[in-house]
Length: 170
Image (cartoon, rainbow, N blue to C red; front, side):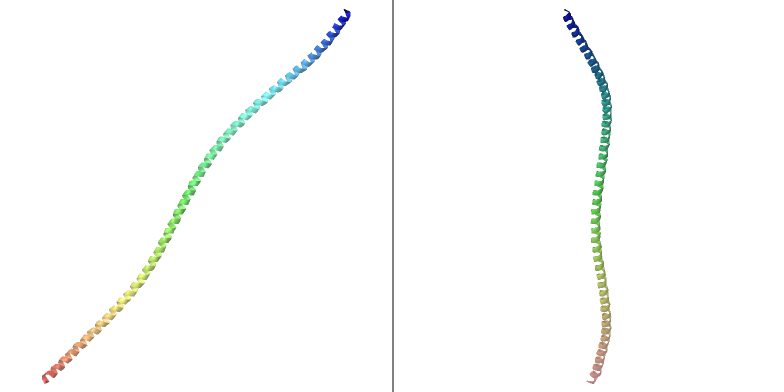
C-alpha cells in the first residue's frame, strides 16, 4: 500500500507540475489573448480612421468629379460658342468675299461704261465737228448758190438786154 501511496504521491506531484505548467501556459495564453485584443482594438481604431479617411477621400473624389463635370459642361458650352463664332465668321467671310466679287464686277462694268461714255463723247465731238463742217459747207454752198443765182440773174438780164437790143433791130 505504501508503494501505491508513493506512486499516487508521485502521480499527484507530476500532475501538480502539469497543472502548474498548464497554469503558466494558460497565463501566457491569456496575456497573448489580451495582447491580441489590444492589437484588435488598435486595428479597429486604425480601420475606423482609415474608413473615415476613405469616406473623406470619397467625398473629395465626388466633389472633384462634380467640378470636373461642371468644367466639362463649361468647356462644351465654350466649344459650342466658339464653333458658332467660327461658323458665323466663315459665313461673314464668305458673304464679304461674295460682296467683294460683286463690287469687282460692278467696278469692271463701271469701267466699261466709262470707256463707252468716253468713246461716245469722242464720237459726239467728231459728229459735232462733222455737223460744223457740214454747216460751213452748206453756208459756203448757199453763198456760192446766192452768188451763182446773182450771176445767173445778171446773165439772164444781160441776155434779156441783148435780146431786147437785138430785137428791135431785127
